[in-house]
Picture 1 (spheres, rainbow, N blue to C red):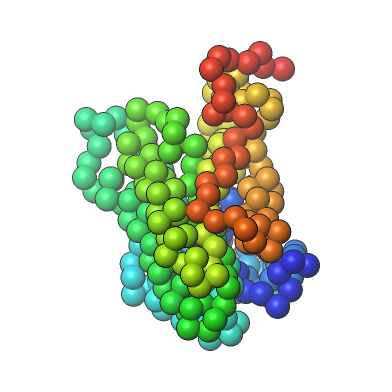
Picture 2 (cartoon, rainbow, N blue to C red):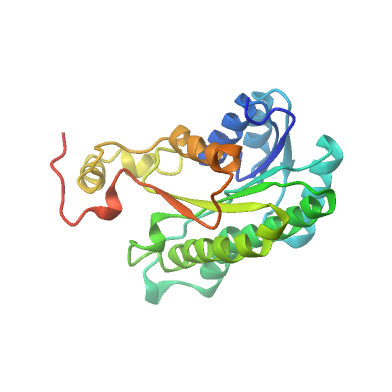
Length: 253
């Protein structure tokens, strides 16, 4: 119960990694605001977590972010933890990518992280809350694909923002870290991972020999937000089964 009497706000929380994080924080005693654009799924997910609430929000629009932060404070009284998880992927070859696709990925992934961090940090500083932010980055900050120009740009920005913001908030006792997941089993990745050739290709680059789970990510998020990580800030923790250190392919079981 590391988060008893604490309030966590998780964006992109209707399903996948976001819901996994919301569930973990609720299990450890937190009241949780599940924030997402998908109202139907989000409300169903929130209903499974006692002491939680769903808030619909387009995380890339400042007015909606401000309203969501205010609604969370009105509902729960405070915000102690923010998990900036909202994100999308729009894979396109570089020369075929529309400006609108690039802008949407940057707005959803990177700008939303800035808006929720800025708004929640103001609240924490005003109340003297020594809170924590956990931002969802990616291994694409370092290893990526030619169709992921927008996505890699947004996630690289998140890791760089994490460093800069950690310095800005350190004098207030507020910590900021990020997680860089590798291949995680979610509804979003199901089609890819259910294809035998794709599965084999991915596992051949994953030394631990399995895909990650939302529970794996949630465990790291909970650690980073807890007092167990009280001296850790400005870091991106890569959760990728050993992939980033690999310079060859592995045999697949």
